[in-house]
Length: 244
Ligand SMILES: C[S@@+](CC[C@H](N)C(=O)[O-])C[C@H]1O[C@@H](n2cnc3c(N)ncnc32)[C@H](O)[C@@H]1O
Image 1 (cartoon, protein in one colour):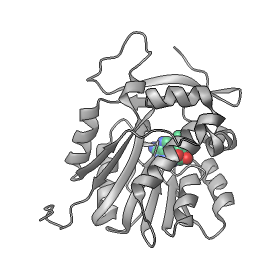
Image 2: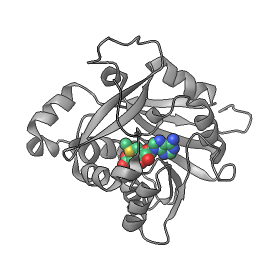
Image 3: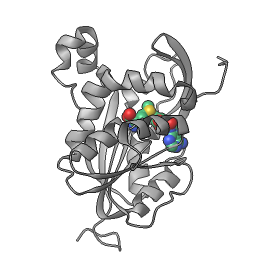
Image 4: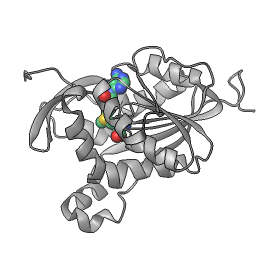
């Protein structure tokens, strides 16, 4: 299928996406609470929010006492983040396919919500995340669940292949063309391990029970068919790569 217009043009739908993300079932009652639960107590931690968008997770982490830097490829999304977070917030336009503009070991955690599936090759990005994390630091990431990314496609894609797919995303009655990359679970875990991380957790959380009454149909669907997959991976505690 041919799509009119540029895919993933977040600048052109920053306000619409941000408004949707704010209170939606999948973001406000599923993805964000899951990321915050995985992050735990973040008081005093230096956190890089990679692909921060308009900054809802950045703000939540900051409210919990973290010192957060946000990066995103979309200047439009970062403008929304600045409005939310204020003029003194640390926000930079950065494409995750490029080297990160930070010193080695600058962060205790990197959080990457719903952004890695925009990248064909995770290798260079994960290597950069590892470089900017201190030994023992964590990468916490959420991505499209392979269960969802490979389902309902005709023809059915080869599960073992990393392939792109394009679809029209309906946002507040407006259709925007999106291109994502799907990959099998083993390709994800291999990429983390190749970048030198240790797998600490793979999580398939339930939505926040508070959403049951607000979104009865969506809640039932999401409780039984996961949208996203969550990872916590750790940089080794010593520079030699051993945790001993
Ligand atoms: C689905 S939104 C998620 C935003 C935010 N993490 C959240 O959960 O609210 C995906 C974000 O990834 C950003 N993005 C996509 N590709 C990117 C890339 N190559 N480098 C940096 N950011 C990217 C988009 O601009 C967008 O803000």
